[in-house]
Image (tube, rainbow, N blue to C red; front, side):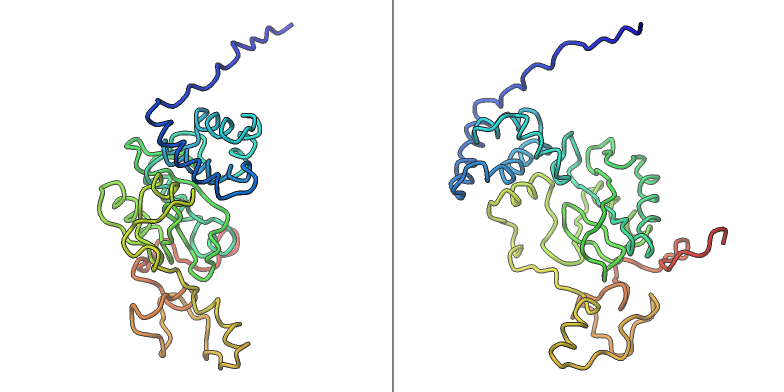
Length: 277
């Protein structure tokens, strides 16, 4: 008969230091007051505790449970269901590579494999310097900008293996990085606090937008009775004759490559060939 050792039961999670708890509790009370039923505040509270430690720790879940009169099992069930909540220490920058169908076909798989090799980490792992956590994600809802990489949920469109490597190198070196569209980049902890429902204090962040690309808007233009462009889809690297001036509009990968993604002959971003080719 095999001897199975169950080990000692896990001890209760420690509490936050008094000063940290007082600060978090004041913020948490502000969040809870927004809801008629306190348990509805669980999702933003999980973002709040994540903004403190960079992940949702057992201490953070105990904190949420106590304030919302829930069991730690109920809180854990939610924290483990949603992938935006990290369950272990992670990097300052969460780099997510879309590997869903369209992004994969356009080069997302090559980007993800290239970053794993370049950073020396696997899916969900963090670089030794604590700067970057790499993960593949199923969809960024930005198919007309494929392949897409997100950093702390900000968009970096029309990427290639080379541009993605430059991106993570800049992040690790502390060099300024600007998303293709949307607000300026901030740390993962700062992003989590914003997702908890607190004001985004970055200059110009509220005004910044991530407009849809031309391919997404064709149906809307037709519904309005506007004439469709002569050609919506064209080969990557070949801009249409009537394309707008650089900087006047955010184009998608079906319309023109962005400056962030120069041509990469090693990984052509086109449909995969037959097996063996």
